[in-house]
Image (cartoon, rainbow, N blue to C red; front, side):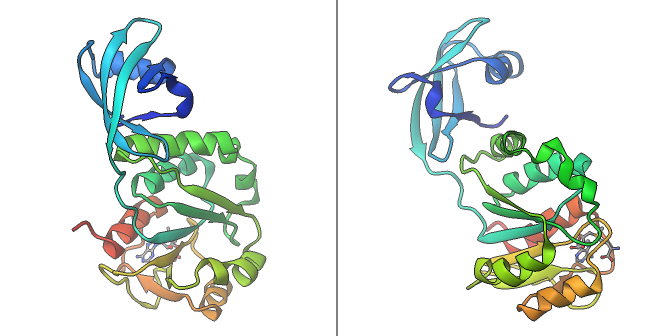
Length: 238
Ligand code: SAM
């Protein structure tokens, strides 16, 4: 937890928050914090600053907080990701959030098993929990938007052209295409396939609406590896 993420409901008075549960435990057991100590805090969907511990007990911790800076700018990418298996989903949501992606669409694809859509990890509350962990990790406050689309063809034909309008359209595919560009300097809609890869029909459908296929070389990477490589290659830190 590199950032204590705060919610409006944490405020007991203007500028004073009271925290319990996971955040209290982290502050007292991991930070081993004492009254007077300062910790980095951020208001959800708001600014980042410092909180001074004014009271600490087994039941709660109180901090006087002040917000002084904006969260880091997000990379200008919309990510379209074939739904990963439930075991991977949690971590991938955390990684996507930590990388700063602010719009993620989880889509169906021929090689996504139907049962994956039944996982409780897709419940809104569970997705938010994983996003929160990603924000805490990356010292960010802006929650990503997560959209679920269970039908590939209607999504690609009816929604994706508008969603991807005015952005460079790329589909990461290990076979064919060009090497993935480096340091784009413009916004991008990036599609990443399922563990078994997209079938040719799906790549063709994406091509029909202007998506060019890009590769990362001859090594076939797992989704959780390909994803951060692609995002940091398209939008490297400066
Ligand atoms: N056998 C599958 C195939 O050939 O498409 C492998 C799929 S890979 C495990 C899962 C996804 O990660 C791919 O659909 C692609 O989006 C991305 N990926 C993995 N390695 C890649 C590479 N070398 N170049 C581009 N994309 C890659």
